[in-house]
Picture: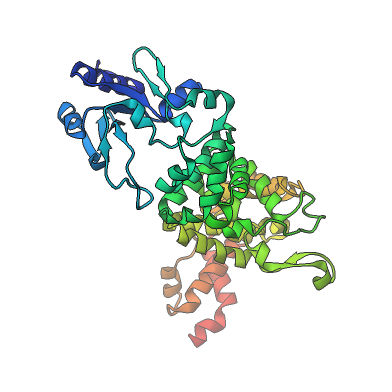
Length: 451
């Protein structure tokens, strides 16, 4: 292989198969890459399976890394790519619900695929001829659009509880049906999904939200009884009515489904979670018209929602930075209603929120999923288009040092003065250091005397 260009993942997988075969071993492409090639999709990565032991693979590929050699998995990296090479194994027990108790290496690919999760992921391909080896009926299920567990579904889900979430994700991603016995087993085992680590569940949920089929995914989570286990706060939205004049679409659940349906593939995880959680404070704050005297209300649903969203982010161990953005999206989503009444300084501070484009997109989806009135959205778009960046974030005309030089003593009043000065600057009442000093002397004369 020439080194003046980087190899493709397929070329790397092929060269690994060739090396193994040259050294007297079987080698086949397996799993998701075969499925994706048959569906006419570009595989994200390639996996190779062989009867060569991990020790032998490490010997043949000096650059390789034993990532899970005890389970027969070795990683072969090259040019920033990596291919997993797994040794054929047969089934053992899984007492911890994720890792096999003992790994029995097997000599045949037939035995190997029996322990994999779904038939569509159990296909093998000869790297050179493209011949498919199908020992589990995966091709038929791929053609008829079915997610079916290999062998006994109860056993497959008991081995690794995350497979229930993966079944939903694959069904949503490909627009497939989950076969009824497999679906029944998911319902029976749904409660056990909490055995899975928070991080793995978070990754699975985030992928479900950002692959472009989030609505289908969440409808399936709900139907399979997984939603009330992994996100009871979202399941609680079902049947919570909303005032029809603002929400002709229906209850909080329907509104949230419409929101996430609007998320295209490749959406940022924080925007996706913000969309999912923006109204999570509504179910606990619901008050019917009979109680409020005029209409259904959700008083303080934003504050309550931020607290609930924070608990969810903590439960799923989000990075602090992601948590902050998700909470900011929930906290600010109702502020768009006021943009036409905001002082210029307030509006400038509002659009200065970090990653404001996510706030704006959340608001757009929120409107399109309810009353469809995009006036506020348009107003903010125009403001951003017409206002130069240096007016939104001007250089400060006055600093703390300037205040000290004017005779003010540093203390709590400092930040108050600086904020008022910045507001005046954002309102374009003052533009220079001299004007700012004059403004402060007038407005804060007493403070100076008493300081």
